Image 1 (cartoon, rainbow, N blue to C red):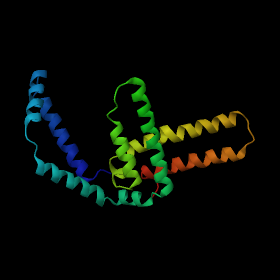
Image 2 (image 1 turned 30 degrees about the vertical axis):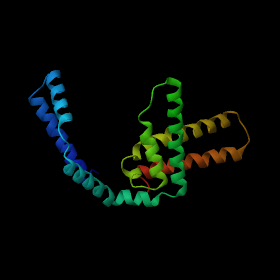
Image 3 (image 1 turned 90 degrees about the vertical axis):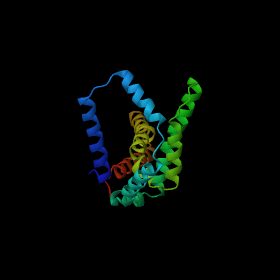
Length: 181
């Protein structure tokens, strides 16, 4: 299931780990190495080439393109809703704790990209979006349905609405996991 980009990245990571095992370094040597790498000028051309290659691999992936094309307006709206709940929860916890959450920017970026149907939502943000849908939409819907059924209400309309919402979320998660084409 791994494409060529991931295979090369994994191979390079394994090679780096093997080199570190052969020549262990002290904490001071590691700090010096990190400092020297931070002080080195960045290789702009190679980073741009790597980014272009990565984007090309992602864009030509037929599975990801199919996923992006198969997402309808309801799916996009569901993803945006799940991301907005996450954003609001993180903002509320920021205010309560007084500590700034730096990860919130990426959720805002993903929400905006989901609204624009950008390919990023099928590549970088697919797994976090699945987690947001599960945590912010699917679990609360299931809990509310369970509470209604425990209350032994005869409100079949409400139960049907929750069933529809739950099936919508589950279908979207399956799509994002490439289990529905």
